[in-house]
Length: 314
Image (cartoon, rainbow, N blue to C red; front, side, top):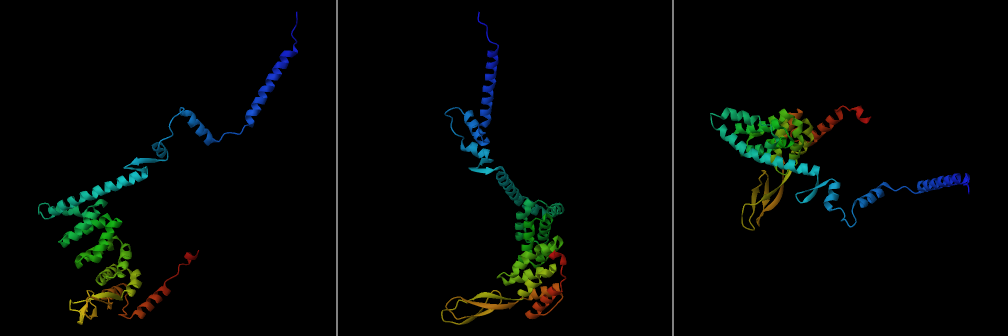
């Protein structure tokens, strides 16, 4: 009978352990797969053989886009579009509502309540309709109510309408009412638009803007007002005479020019703006009349006398 050697099992066990260690070390030495590659491999593994690649909708959705009215948009864009549309709907609803309020103002039985409702409008969506109503309204008191509502709303577009009324409305009392509303809101808010009007080509509008600046007491507008004391304008002179005839014609701004016939002739006139001078006197307490060098010297001396804030240099 052949006996098995006790050494053989030990040798076999040792060989098995050595082989396992070699396999483990070989696995550790292999370069690790990148996360992105693994993701792609996993994605390919998830798809069955022959499956189609991801659709455009799947890709765009993964990037945060949604199909909306024939275009791919983000959720923020969709929200802005829908918000704008809701605002447009609200604005259109205010037209008929204001017309109804206006009819109630003419009825003695409902006039008091309608007046209160009109003056207490606070919805920003009402601004376009209120602005249109001011332009059309024939009754000064109702225009004042409309301006009060715009001032109460106080959004930038509402204030822009009040400034426009202060410059462009044909009724001086309504312009003054608009200026009073701007004074209550804060006169500085109207300064940029009023100063811009001083540089416009319309001489009558320039003077109306100057009146508003003076009434608001905007001392910061002194320099632009000095520049607008005298302005030059182009006028077209023509009285319809035949070619070769000579005539003197007057432009819409009040200046005169010479026309030698043969159709309209362009000329330049230099005008002194009374309302600008009045505004300067009102806001500065100075009166140098039409002496432009004296006005500019006063402006320079005022600037030199202004205290310097040393903290600005820090």
